[in-house]
Image (tube, rainbow, N blue to C red):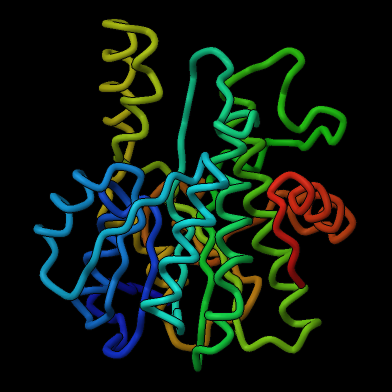
Length: 301
C-alpha cells in the first residue's frame, strides 16, 4: 500500500463501474481513473448536463445516466433502466454526497436531506443492484465515509434530526450511518456466502466543490470561510486515492476501511483508517439496517 498511486490500478477492461456523483470532485477523479484503465463507467448524476460535460473530459468509455439520490423514485428508475443494458455490474462506488450547513431541509420523500442523499439513496441503490453485482466475478461496493464520522453518534429516537437540528452534526451523523451501512453490508454478504465485497474509504480533508456549496447560505462571509477552508485541504486527485484503492487494489477484504495516513487522517498516502466505535458495533448495524429497510422500501440480505 505504501506509495500507492492511481497508476497502479489493475486493468479494468471488461468491467462495468457505476460511480454516483461522478460529474465533479472525488467522483469525477474516480470515474476518470477507472475509465483510463479500461472500465466502462456509468456516471450516475443528478444533473445530466453537468454529467455530459464531465464525460467529455474523460478519456475512455463512459455513459451518463440520471440519478437523484434524494428521490427514492429516481433511484428505482435508475436501477431498473441500468440493468436492462448492464445485467452484470462489477463495481458500485457510492460516492455522491451532500453537505448542507444551513437550515434543515427535507428530500422529496420527507427525510432530512443529508441523511436521505448520503445514506438512504445509496442503501436502496445497493439493494436494487445487488443481484447484478453478484453476477460479476469479483464485484465490490465502495461506500464513501468521512473523517467527520469519528465524532458522530446516532440518535435512534431522532435519526432525521427533527429536534434541535444542527447541520454539521447531521452531516457527521449521515457519514457515520454510511460507515455503519458499509460494515453491516459486509457482515450480511459474508453470512449469505455472496461473492460481493463491501469496503469503505474516506478522503480526509480534500478540495472539492462541496465545501463552497455548504457555505452558500452565509453569502459573502460564507465565501470567505470556504476559501480559507480550501487552504487546509489536499488536492482532489490525492483525496480520491483511498476510494480508488478500495475499488481496485488486489487483495482488498470485505469490511476494510481506507483513508489518508498523515496528520490525523487528513492527508497523505493511503492506509487503513480507524473507525468510530459505534460504526463497528453489529447491534447498531442491525438496528440501522432495519430502519433503512423501512424508510427506503428496499429489503435485501
